[in-house]
Length: 325
Image (cartoon, rainbow, N blue to C red; front, side, top):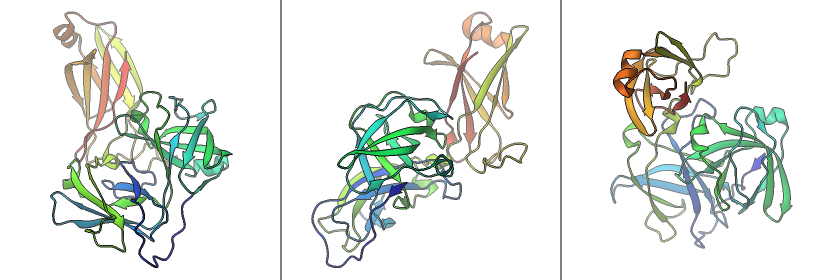
């Protein structure tokens, strides 16, 4: 498990040092969160009791967007963090992480399946892969080796694009992670932020300024899976299985909940990075006809690369499933 810093009485005002923090766009991990909200993980020594987070689209009119009552556990990798298998335990990867404060602990496999030992690691583009670790071994002061990993949790496989270098930021997710109140209208809007001890006014010198736009990843449809293709008379029919952001753990249902206003897909036909055509569908299947292939490539194709997106009325295109059929 991850042990956050203790909540303490604010006592005398504390002015030493600026808070260390990370903004996070995360998928729905429990299913009962506000779907568009963002998060902040904050650490500071000594901890001032709580950290306030104010936001505004301008340089005035700041409003309180969230409060972090506990210190989060933040760290950085000391080893390269490679790509790994999805949907099964990654038994090969071992990665040392140096943390600033707090403690990590191992957990049973059952506890991990129930949500224990969850962390997020940021890739070069700023996206977060959510992963879990079963084993945390203390190997040096404030340094743990993480192993027995479950990768790309919450549908974050889109963030696992390449091995990540030494020094990559890791945030350990616990009750210390503070939700940030973002409206649908503020999604993808660069906001001005002020982060500092809640015992002080926003104008105090201990506050840190930052600009950041939250993406509302909790609203992003997950990528489809199990893409298959069947050819007949030159036509290619692709099919897939959709996933859901909400309520997908009930094994007694014949299908997972839709979690969107309606079922819609966009399917890009690709030639390298060039989109030759975009097909649409309201079912988890689409036919790319021989005539369309001829119009796009000059003849029916023996191999077609496509990207399939489930659509959201609030978010737009979800995470893509790419396949060559």
